[in-house]
Image 1 (cartoon, helix red, strand yellow):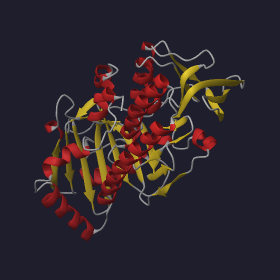
Image 2: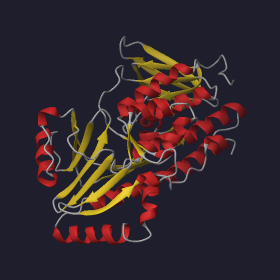
Image 3: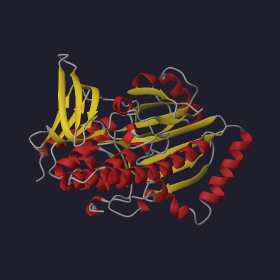
Image 4: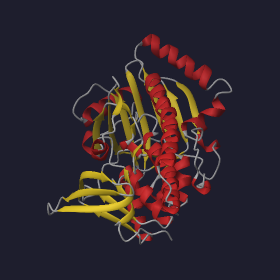
Length: 399
């Protein structure tokens, strides 16, 4: 087991206990590295947020023996149908993917994080510290010092480690303290989504409606619930707007009073200029943001953590300067982000075209090209993120 020197509080400090940060802490714990996982919030969010876990992520969870509890808490999506207001354009069969994970798992992000946090108890060298708000980051030639404020008492806390990782979200204070710029844009399209009790016969099936007046997406959720996403102008969350739009296009009757969670969002695409500075690396939304359409953002962050764990294990074992390995992490994960973000952007662009002419051209393209040629057999691996390169698998971590 590799442990921190007495002059450090831990080998690694991870700031942010969302999906990427908590997964990274679990990986480090399994490797025998000591880790402090810091989180500003005390209470775990109950909002469902991201819901799609792709096969590569499920395979990675298996490395820390979490597949069973995660599968038990989710529901498999085995097919996705693409429709207009009145016709079927094609059905994507995810069951043809390589087993055992020949589906996309629908599980609320809040549930996934809870399971990941519960697993931290398996690693005695990993500690989750809640209510710690980061105030500053200072680096030396061989370590990192992070100053925090205890949100309950207001008292300052000083923590040190060999390395640190920022997993503190798209508005990352850590990234700001490090002076790493993030660049990108906000898309013109906006959406509203809500979780409702299941009221369709579409068991295990996602349905996506591309219409002349905008898109509607529908995904199954665990515990007999279903998410609905509608294309809408920016506005306050309004369950009634979702209900009216869904019934008009699909004929499915929802009840606004039964909505469990409703929110609006305008997608963004942003990428930080560097994935590291000195002995601190960025991971997940702290490094990049992409459109949530297609469900690739959270999974890209989980893959960041998977790659970064290998880098940190080697750096702690060899004591070599971090720049070369961090630069490789930067290069590989930046490449993977661009692929995933481009796919998300293309899917969103295709689905949000409005008007009769655009709808007719889109329908012809989907029916005759995507589902009417040999491209069809490549669609399931493409949407399941099996074709995005993973250049540093954990099982071959000495690269």
